[in-house]
Amino acid sequence: MNAIRRRFQPEQVRELVLILLIIGIIIFFGTQIEGYFSARTFNRISTSVAVIAVVAVGQTLVVLTRNIDLSVGSIVGFTAYVVGTILSHNNGIPPWAVILMAIVLGALLGSVNGVIVAYGRVPSIIVTLGTLALYRTILVEVSGANSVLTNELPKWLVDLPRLNVVSFGEMDVRLLFFLALLVVIIFQWVVSYLPWGRRLYAIGSNPDAARIAGFPAQRIVFTAFVLSGSLAGLAGFMFLARFGNITVVAGQGIELQSVAAAVVGGVSTNGGIGSPFGAFLGAILIDVLENSLIRWLAISEFWRDALLGLLILLAVATDTVIMNRLRKLWSQHELEVTEDTTVPPGKQGDKGYAV
Image 1 (cartoon, helix red, strand yellow):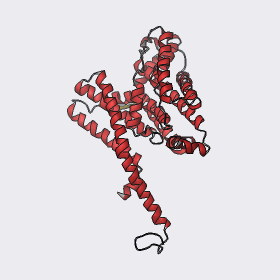
Image 2: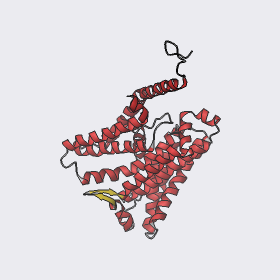
Image 3: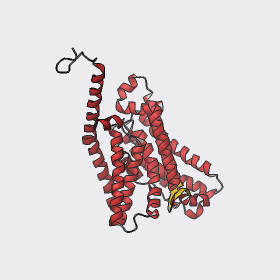
Image 4: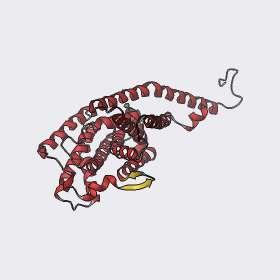
């Protein structure tokens, strides 16, 4: 047990448990669904999880600061529709410009949340609930309820979801999944090694202490919302590439999926705990469950949302009971190690106390 405590933190233990749980679920459904262990299943799940994983990483950055972004689904839909409409009228725009357009548009929408939450000091749940409805309403009004159709989009975009980066036998690592994996790696590095990333944890763990320490809390929270919007914009581009046909309700429900992925992945709603990698694992777990249950039991959309709600409740309960217990055990161990190293040899009484 002591060896585990020395090598791993409680959050890393949770991520390891998530990996084992994902493997166990895959093995279970492999025994229940004919043809489950196939390249087709892998390709379907990996492409599906890519969009949610990118949004979940952005959601993680916001939740780490003790906030939440409920507008990400509307930003995904808004970006997908606007970029799709522009492309349908001009197929000649280069791919890099299209991706940049989606990211910038998402960043602008995210900055609205950031300004009001960080500088206006309005609770994020109120602000983002309002912008969720606002962005969706603007989209409906501007679009006239028209749709973007696949046959209006450039061929390179339509073919993008089937583009492979590398193949292992019949299993293909599609470009969209590779892009999501790249986002996870970049932001995992940011929160682990860059000063800005470490300050996210400080602000979420103890906002008052962070302000006393001189951290620019408002600017950091604002940046987190801008990055969340940027990643939702990127996800909007990926959503457009994956589905092609985009209506005014595109992206609806993604906000719940992103929150579920983050919370299931170990990101604490109290802030200061969690990681993009954990959110990525949460997104995989949720997508594997959804896709597998649809094939196994043919569950409806209603039950899929009910499953997400149940997973969120279980994750919060786990964080409250089990993870808090683990953190106390780790803290006690660290305290014991500190006491052992600070008390000089031969300076202890009969009961081990310093004299």
